[in-house]
Image (tube, rainbow, N blue to C red; front, top):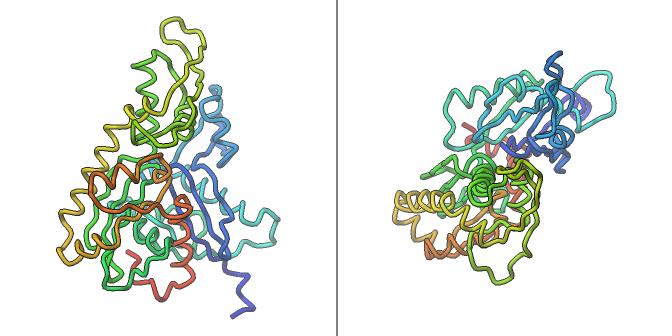
Length: 340
């Protein structure tokens, strides 16, 4: 079999709304924004990932940037296929005489419909996959942070990504109850953009709103070690002239309050649906927080205050899901029953 190993390439993909990560040979080989740039006149894809992100919001009429995923699912089928294909090419940039057949494990939101599932599978097959397995994001996140999912022990995992927030209680290698809401990192970015427009009369781009979220984003209006105020540039809506304003973390906490409250509601609902024996386990083990949203300052503390449960942020929360997907790929026979 070893002789033919080079004919098959095994890859694990975390196909995210904001970022796509690929694991090959136990290493994260691709970590790129989920975006493509297309030439309108020819319909050709001219850039994928970071290069396309640099063009986002700065293009002329002839170039269009597309984010193929929205709310954790594929919104533009053709662009998604080009994006997956472009990112697979990044794994081995050297020209090969032939392309190996691909075996993929892709993670998907737990609240996904059959049609949306089919779209992910089809996109992967069109991009050259011979075998495609799907795994739910909260399950992949749990495996990625080192939880033994097969034990008769209840664990609650919250994965706040770009498009969806996945809340799941996992026991005996299955999801007992889950809540999947389409409020996550992208929603936070939109909240900041909206707040700047209403409160400061300044129009900023999506990338600038994202920068604010990273630099001074917060879930609490009072932090122990607050980040310094952040200067942002945009267009004054009254005069149309570019201007600079400074924003503080407490302002952003106020802007994000409504979205974070929705996530808190979903967590409480999931806890409400949890069988009593598993609730007892969660009281002991606490809640695990993964995904890019876990990096929002004070979010763990805020959820802990709301649920009165300990909240632990996974180490390297951005890569927890893709790590779990990679482990599932290596032990495909053991985890095959987890694949929907």
